[in-house]
Length: 438
Ligand SMILES: Cc1cc2nc3c(=O)[nH]c(=O)nc-3n(C[C@H](O)[C@H](O)[C@H](O)COP(=O)(O)OP(=O)(O)OC[C@H]3O[C@@H](n4cnc5c(N)ncnc54)[C@H](O)[C@@H]3O)c2cc1C
Image 1 (cartoon, rainbow, N blue to C red):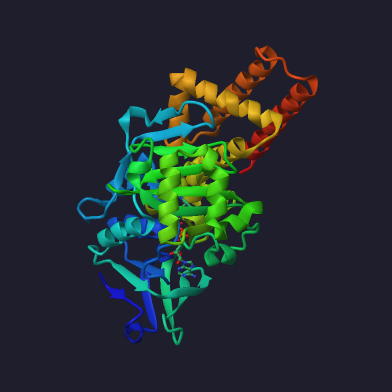
Image 2 (image 1 turned 180 degrees about the horizontal axis):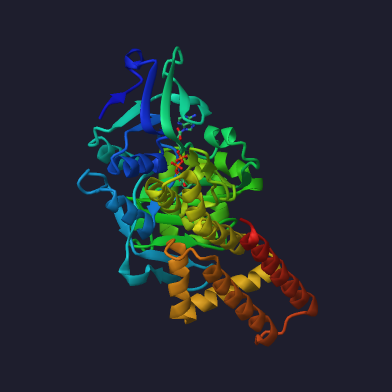
């Protein structure tokens, strides 16, 4: 692959051209480069980082894993350590786990973030029509061209291209160039630890521990290791610097084996930390400038949808005749995964009566109905992206929660019942507003 790295800035020409220039070589930028390269386009990919160990997506739903396979990425062939995942095991505090397997026995992939990117890069390196400007940063964007600063920042390279793709993540300069308003809303923090995978109660599933200050996700990333992600509420940010306090706060909701493994891991290495933010997926670009992945929008990683949604952007854009066609195709289904993610996050952390009742109704419905488990997993796996389908699932839950409150065996104080009803109304209003927003 033509490749210019930080050690060879002098070799970069002052001007170059491609059919497509992609700003950002994260998972979605690399997948977009691959999708266009397979269509025969001349691709230029610009990314400032060679490798990064930052905390990011490591659980890839079958939808995302299938897209990577269809793009020719084979983790086993590239000798990238990874592990399969059969679905989720949910651990509500104080009751038995609920197992939600993927529909039809599909499998997710768990893999460390930087290794997943490395796998896509290795596949990309087999395409002679791809140029990578590694270590370089895009400083200016206009229709048909971008300006790129060389790694030593001493020179600027101009890349002319019919299509400019912003795959530059949450602080996207391409998004800013398009003039799209609205910044990301802070939600919480995520603290990640790598532990011995044998400590997990359900090693073949993504384990979700609920009932603590925030949800904790834990899943295998290879044959031996598991990633544990602690969601840390924004007002508890001091825990990020004090893992002992953090573990004490989550201890009552975690199996002892996981606590002990985290203690060992945190004694050996500092944790990785990332901020969780929400920006609604609404605007995908125009006039020869497109956005993909987190540059379009991003949400809390509880449902692990970010990369699958971004890979759907990548393959849809590469098959579209124009940015406008791409935008219209993605707008129809792009919001359901984020609504599910933000809705479930609020449901799992909320403490008011309405949210508590709705949460219990969700647990009960998952335990008692195979159809509900099936529908949930199609939504979670990004297989079902119609708003109407999410709306039906949500309405059923509201009805189930209302019945629990109205007909439940435990008599509640009137104030509690009124609070629950008001809470349901809030939830219904939230969903109606969000689902109506394009
Ligand atoms: C803690 C955490 C856990 C997550 N877990 C999951 C999960 O399990 N599963 C899942 O699917 N998703 C998960 N996500 C979401 C997932 O990480 C993102 O959706 C995904 O990384 C988005 O990829 P991207 O390529 O669009 O953006 P990014 O990964 O942010 O990559 C953007 C790239 O653009 C580059 N860049 C930025 N500015 C410029 C510039 N001016 N010029 C050139 N390059 C530039 C950056 O260096 C970077 O390499 C998680 C997110 C977080 C924060």
